[in-house]
Image (cartoon, rainbow, N blue to C red; front, side, top):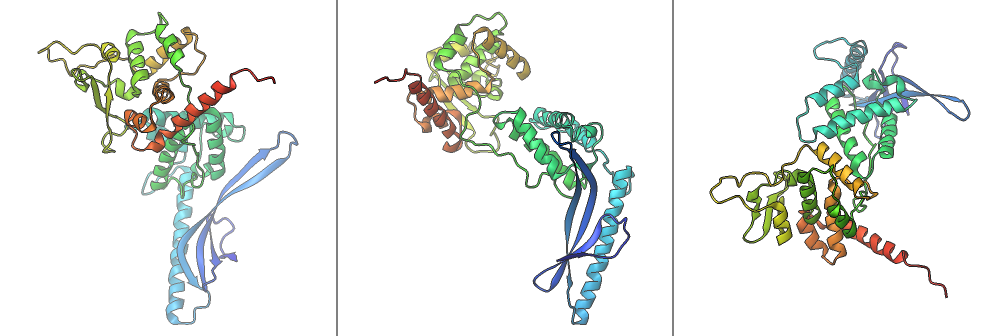
Length: 399
């Protein structure tokens, strides 16, 4: 059972209590953040939903205080709860009106998000900015939220909105794309909670799950790899071609191949050694060793002349990732390959093709630099699917 304490009808939040089974009452605050109106496109029926949030204060009252000590505890707890209620109400008023009192208040979450992105300096800053663009797109594309594109008060960022946002992301992105964008969005929200922009995270209980065992990106078959290599596209930068082919035969990521230097290759033993950028400093298993055959050594180019001092020079002189991706897409198109190929598809193609040719999963895991076999298992499922597709491609038996 719950009840509210007497107060003004305009109090927001309101102070209430919930009767517990242990003879105490738990004090809480009830917030009201306005209404959301939705219209059923088929029936035209309007539905009004009130946005409310309940926050437990961690304060308790004795239901029947039978000693002076318990009565004093009740008075102190109730007095503290009322002071907290007043403070929270003042914060909400300041936030709504844009006042500043003691600390900066935030009246527009989109502006806060923009400032966060501008000051963000980690390597995934491009994905962080993409998360802001996707969130703005979501608001603009949703009739329910389109009126909030220019200004979004923090109290209107609700759990229901986050549910709609995650569904929007999953409709626009494939595989890890939606998950990755939402992870960055939650990073901003968590910072906003820490700084008092939100009372609690609207993302709590709202998640995007990805099946690690499903390979979502397209894979180039051995035949398609040959077709691509043989394609003489005038639009393809020779350095981009060389680097992508190298990735097709070694499974390297773009962030690793662009940083390769001649020092990474032991030419006498035909071995490539490097540390993965993705796990460097975070994992003791970030180092990778890949044997290189004579073809790959020729593709990488010979070592610098003795005494030239250029061993630290990069093997592939690549432009930005965006430029490389545009070049790759034109190259794939000109080769007549009807697949959506990104740079990371080279890594997936390498894994699937060597598994298909008989390599065991432990060897593939080591070549890819995976810390666990579970990250490699998705490739075995892709191979199984390819085998099933090959069998199913045979003509039906008629007997």
